Image (cartoon, rainbow, N blue to C red; front, side, top):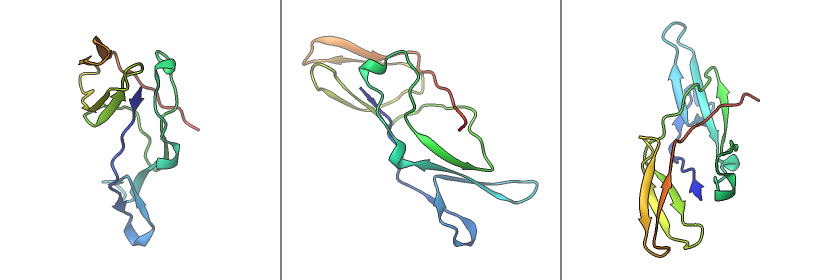
Length: 119
């Protein structure tokens, strides 16, 4: 099971309009644009989801549109049969391998891909 881990930090929006996960100011018009991670939509990606696209998080986008995802560190996984927890998985190379001592077998995440679907 792969769990999507999201940071808790939010950035305050200009003028006291709340906060967002990411805020970026346009260099041309000085407009403040933002993306908010909707934490209530975060879902895990399980073994039965293997090789299928599944919605794992939704964003509220104002003036910005995500076009690419570069996975980094901070992911976690749990062995399906053993329950072994693997924390702080780094997916920067789009692959990760380890050894599950309880199950006595190699485990891994391979060829991480993604897609954004506009709602």
